[in-house]
Length: 146
Image (cartoon, rainbow, N blue to C red; front, top):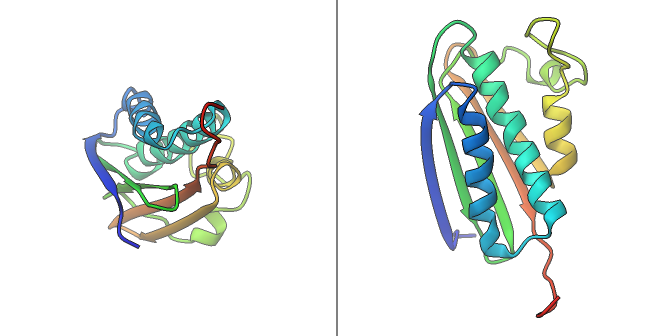
């Protein structure tokens, strides 16, 4: 299915850009007239994906993060967060709740949270090449005037 609208944003892997990315995704999704709950779910999932890129992909340097947003006719929002960092050696292990490569301050729940707030989550990664996280969420149709 071909998207009806797209946007792409690139930014440095600074933690300050996490809020920018989540707000940008929420503003883009607003075209589909989501409920407040849907907007908050999208913002949370984007926040987790971008935070993973900032913290885990580039643990000791700044790098580039790309946020791609796409809307489809069936009221689906697709969010892709891509980095060119260290990559993930074992995706299945990384998606296990409580697993983290970060320090003791990290909960290891990022992928679990993304999965619970979005309809689908795909993770592709190659060690030394980076990671691509693709999430989809279908926005409910609301009656006119609701």
